[in-house]
Image 1 (spheres, rainbow, N blue to C red):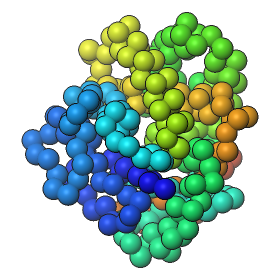
Image 2 (cartoon, rainbow, N blue to C red; image 1 turned 45 degrees about the horizontal axis):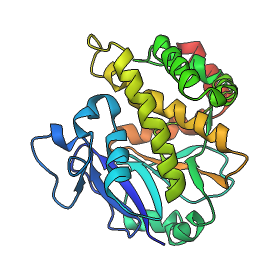
Image 3 (cartoon, rainbow, N blue to C red; image 1 turned 180 degrees about the vertical axis):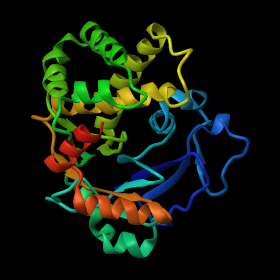
Length: 277
């Protein structure tokens, strides 16, 4: 099977030379140079120039329109998935991606596991508040943008409304637009997702947003992925794998310590966030 997992990068970072991984420069149309050894999202049919608001989704769109594969996956240069069924926590912290690390994390078994499922997601993280409230309270997010997406989804896909409200009322978040899908599902997802975001772009005014706030289409797509999963969950073979987040230098020590004291996805961590908010 042809499995391509695109590692979306906006800077020329190290991507291990593993047969599953394809380094992809996103927002290449806005960059001064093309990274050597990378694919670039400004070739063929593309929306590379929208990267400031679409983030890694410009790479997803490019792959949808220009690449043939049996399975499509999307990681970030600082966030990968690794194949551990039944992991307790949504992610671990490591220094940097290397082939020895990927081998230790079970990448020799990854291709075989991928072919058992229709959809692989990053392990959902319990935020102990509804998804809709977490979105509204998150830095650089605006409640009215999620409200607009809900309105658009009701108009375009009224049969999705129940699943949308079910997911947005739950407390499990799927961050990063990170996933692996079989070809037919990936094409269906993209055909559904991008017209919704295009309609949002037509109706929303983000002209006064800061650089972080302009990433709104990427933020919204994270929640839409959860909606799509909820709609299709009864008919798909779905698995959730934990992530490995790469943190360099002194922050690595701090993040490891924080995760040991307050594990991600735990009620203790959620309480601490509310306390120090």
